Structure formats: C-alpha cells, structure tokens
Amino acid sequence: MDDGFIRIADTKDIQPSQMKEVQVDGESICIVNVEGKYYAIDSICTHEGGPLADGVLEGHEIECPWHNSKVDVRIGEVIRPPANEPEPAYEVKIEGNNILIKLPGKSKSSAQIELELLEVIRVEGTDMVSFKFSKQNNQADEDKTPLSEYTAGQFAFFDIGGVNNDPKGPIRHFTISSSPTENFIMFTTRIRDSLYKKRLSTLEKGAKVKVRGPEGQFVLHEDYSKAAVFLSGGIVVTPFRSMIKYATDRQLPLKIVMFDSNRNPTNILFKKEFDDWTTINKNLIIIYTVSEDKHYEHQSTTPNDWKGEYGRINKGMILKYLDNILLNNSIFYI
Image 1 (cartoon, rainbow, N blue to C red):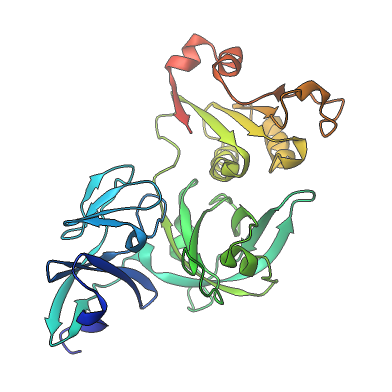
Image 2 (image 1 turned 90 degrees about the vertical axis):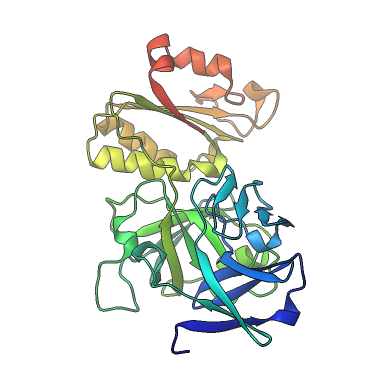
C-alpha cells in the first residue's frame, strides 16, 4: 500500500486474548488481540530466540515459553528478564477485517543475507556437527555483510529452508562458534530428532542458507584488568571457542581460565584447537573434566593417560585452580 502498511492477517483469525505468528518479508511477527485491540511485535525473544507467539498472554504481557521473560506487547518493553533488549513493535491499523502493519526500514543487523555452505565437519563418535559458511552475501554484489562485523560470542538466526511442521518453527538461532578473525562463519550443534535438525543434517556443500543477525550480548568484557573465567559444559562451549580464538589472534592482554566439562574425552569439542592455542596464548588456561559415571577413574571410555579432572565443575574444582586474587577480580561466564 502507498502509506507503507501491508496486510498480514484477518481479524477473525485472532480471537480476543489470542496470538498468532505470521511471516512477513523474512521476519517472524507476533499479532496479539487484547480485548479487541491489535498489537504487533517481533515474535523472536531477544534473549535466546524463543517463540513469543507460543508463550502465555496475560493482559498486555507475553511470557516467553523458553525462559519466562515477559514483554509488553504495546511497546515491546521487557517487563521481566532474562531478556534485556526490547522487542521491535509495529504500528497497526484495521481496515474492515484486515489487520495491517507498517514495517520500518530494516537495520543493518536485522537484514537477512544468504550464505553458502563451505564445509560440514562431523565430530567422530558424537552427534556434534560444525557447519562452515562463506562470509560473502550471495544475494548482493558487496562482500561486506552484517555478519562480517559480529562480536565474538554473538548468535544469528539460520533459515535452512525445507522445514515444515516443526513445533519450534522453521528457523533456529545458533551461537557463531567461529571468531571474527576467521574467514568463515561457523556454528556447531548436536544433531537431534527434531524436523529442523534432521533437515540440517542433510545439507551438503554449496547449499544456500538465509541468515539474520548478529544478536546477543554474551561477549567479552572490555576491562582486561579483570580475568575471564568460563564455566562450560558440552556443546555450550561454542561461544567460548569464538572468544578464545579472537583473544588469541588479537593477542589481547586478557587472562582466560576455562573449565570445560564433558561426559567423556571423545565429547570434548575443539580440544585440539584449544590445546594448540594454549601453546601460543600464555594468558589461556583450560581445565578439562569428564563426568560420565560416578566411578570416573574406572571408565573404559577414559584413556589411561587422561590428565584432566573427573566429575562435574563444582566449588572444590574451581578453588583448586583459582586463588583469592582471581576469584575476586574475575568476570565469570556461565
């Protein structure tokens, strides 16, 4: 329409105190009916990408189904954390039975780009897979894209196409496990039985994927006089890989201590890279621990030359490696 409004739904499709997610120009938008008045905000929670339209609506507030953040549908304001960034809200008007919204111009970070899959790396003996993409946008002549300037630790949304009837929708967000200093975009995940993950596991080199981002504030602090202590378990090591690689490549004067807990040595993701980086980054210390069974020392999956710790990360293990100076002058990432 000439005034910038577009039709997105019919009023009869959204009854009072109900919500509906619609896809508009690559964006997921949540349409809400509160006592006959309609509101529209982004349907992707700014915390970790939870689907707001699948949450609970109470008055003018939506509770995210993933981590219970609350958002005011009138202005997108966060009422309750862990989300701390407001949701984009859209101007709504009704013409007859038509619900129309006005889409603002897209910001650089919200623009959707298309990346090409360069390599699929499967971790032997596990269900973990890394997907490497080009940094160049296949839909534009310019090489520079929003993801060319992401910050280590951020995440992005990946639309791989061909995902139908997945309860969580056709799009997922993943931490970018590569560093901004590397010449590719990578994410790493476990392949599960969801329709999205099954489709993801079939992607081959050359596949085109739509990506939106970067997002998130789980990034390195700027005061390098304070050490960084990473507490990691399993697949959630992905943002720490990005941060460690960045700090190593940039030779940041930042002390990093990472406790990395896994079921067994086979499941220690990126171990060879981490070990290599500790030899060139004197500010980096990594403590590995395995926790598959209560009789840790007798695990057949643990090699005889295992030099790491046994058990889950706990107070005793942390105190073994951190003195009082580090304990009181560090930023902990969990």
